[in-house]
Length: 109
Image (cartoon, rainbow, N blue to C red; front, side, top):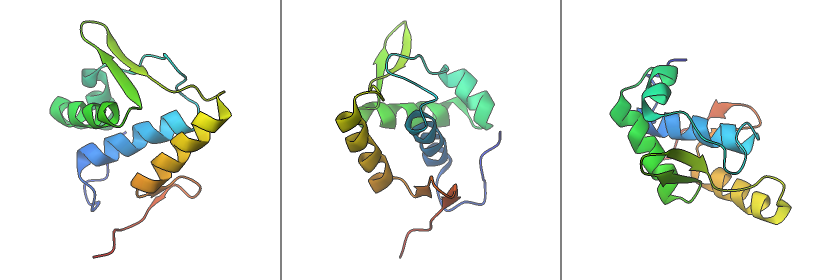
């Protein structure tokens, strides 16, 4: 699945938002491994560096945990309702994608 090259968002942000969407939808659960940077790059049609930057941003935001030599894991657990609601509000606040309509909103300049 190639990313939108004509989008106002940088490619790493598009990958980051797609991964946020997969986490928010429950495709990934706490302690699930996500694909390697190389696999993410192939899946989204971007460079490995772009995939790495998206994963690093999600790690810095506390959604993923990287274990050197192992892989990258999802940190939150969907079943914990309060934590999940806080997580979703955090995603919606910093992501330009409207997950209910699957559209991207443009930032106001």
